[in-house]
Amino acid sequence: QVQLVESGGGLVQAGGSLRLSCAASGRIFSINDMTWYRQAPGKQRELVAVISSGGSTNYGDSVKGRFTISRDNAKNTVYLQMNSLKPEDTAVYYCNADVQTGYILISSWGQGTQVTVSS
Image (cartoon, rainbow, N blue to C red; front, side):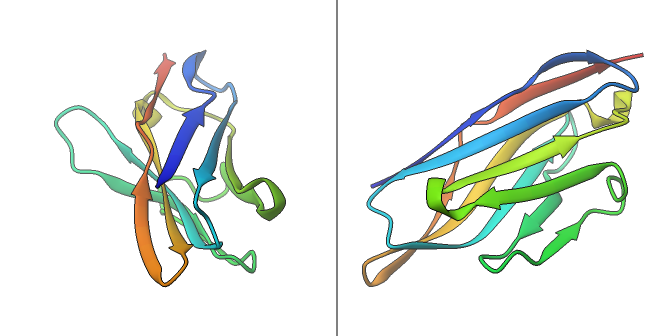
């Protein structure tokens, strides 16, 4: 019923920047929190950043001051601007959205996008 599609990943040198996007589509009444997670090989998935429907944000300690999360509610899209990238930022990045579809709240996930930072 709800699909999330991420884009913007790729290969970048340390110190560079990337911007990820995640667009939600389908039967959407409203979207509450939108969140970016990441998972590096052999590690647990970790929260990168979250943004509420009202625009309040929180970040993981490892990305504070370097990454910025934002959203366009009219487009049902969340963005992650990543600056000053480090090799340890290499991971698959997933977006998650808490979507209200009529009377049901669904936690929906994207398929992930690879970010690789070379040293």
